[in-house]
Length: 214
Image (cartoon, rainbow, N blue to C red; front, top):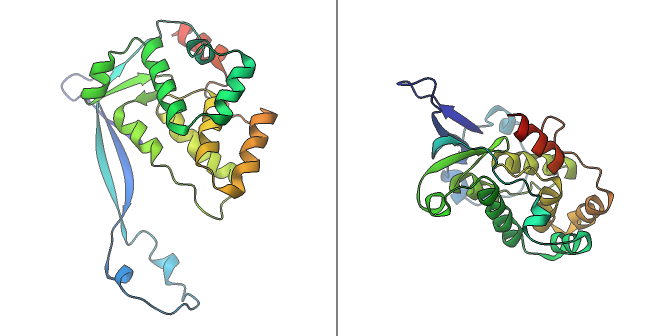
């Protein structure tokens, strides 16, 4: 979860971004080998007992306005067929790094500043920073959960970074999905019916209209 620490000296200026993450605390239970048996129901009572909330500083929030009006497909120079092939066969980090470069380009963010300073750039309804990107790359799909639920969790983490493009969100998800999710991810690529959140940007045209209005 992302939260903003307000600027108390000047309320009109944006404050500082923090990422609140739940961290498991290793304890003696993990060092003991016990025979498998049915649980006694204590898990539900002790849920959260062995985890803590950790706040990670992401940097000062700097609101940005889009300067260049071009789509991601135009940015990487792909036609429709090439773009589909790119999404299906490119590595997770190639797609992610390309989209981060795209955001840096259309919002004219200083790349050296982005790489070397703790700043959270407020873009496309999210916050682009090294910390939020790292948090996205550490996403783990939970075993035994519904595919759509996991995709929604992943999509929300993408939106937190400013990654608003549904095609890219689905493509990234398909790279980290386990084997039994593969057909589901490919089906999404072919159907193109998934919408991450009607309140967010459903496509680049919506994104441009919202940015232009602001």
